[in-house]
Length: 396
Image: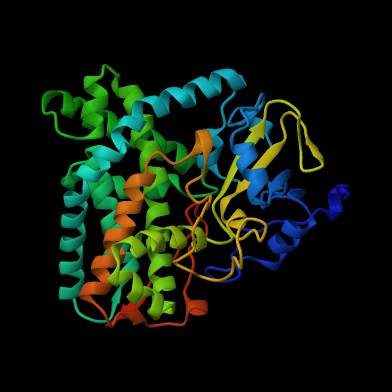
């Protein structure tokens, strides 16, 4: 059923417009649940287009980060950072490592612990909004609210001192470059050394943060560093992007925004709908098959690249009634934005609290807030893994 190599549909990193699904991805979704494609890197892979099959594969232990020949593994993009994520361990060892990392980190994001963080998150949001509003209208919400909120909350929880955060953001930006392998590898070394130095400080001056708890549990600096870096990459740009997109969506639907502000329970549902509808056309997770897998009428061979497109699955008509419609009353809302199964985001409870707090406080304090530019004129980042907006101009 697959096309010949020269006829394979080619994926692109370019999003036609914010919060839209490209016609190509829509066509592939209609063609089948798992489609053979050519990636932006020029390699072949399998794109999972539908909700049910994505959920099934997220539970399949034959799909993971391991590949027997990482140097020659098919790529989604030519990304030096993603190259570092491909392991040459066997699939079972890879699963054990993944499980061990989750075992160490999950208790730190338990529902009870995250609830206890609520006052801390509210304090961060209030302080950021105070500064943003004081600067006057118009303003850049991306740089003035979304980024500082997500960065401050995450750094506070991990244990990154305030005076070290500017250096941290420089190192993270360096590692996110797509094609400059030398810079990425240097950035990784510098970032890991930076984190290891902070962990050593935590042993002498402990705090109520993740690095302290991991080090007190007996983990050496060299093991704490990759865990902290993983949290930073997973929890920073993704939350910023969804926060930006949520403001765009709620601004475009003032009646629904007003209803959510009047009812905290409805705002909770609104956050879920923002999570579903945000980042359409992006958020692809590359993985590899360690064995042959039969699914959706095709055979994924061992070593094949498998692309989990969480955003595309969120617009699957087989899982959602009128998926193009933004509806904060949508329930149930089994979106895949935070993944599922063994790949489910351990920071999901914290992300939800951040989003709900920002949307509630922002639109309560600035009820007349509106976009300065039409949505189709908002500029997206190029050349970086995170995607998202370069800025979000607003006025009030």
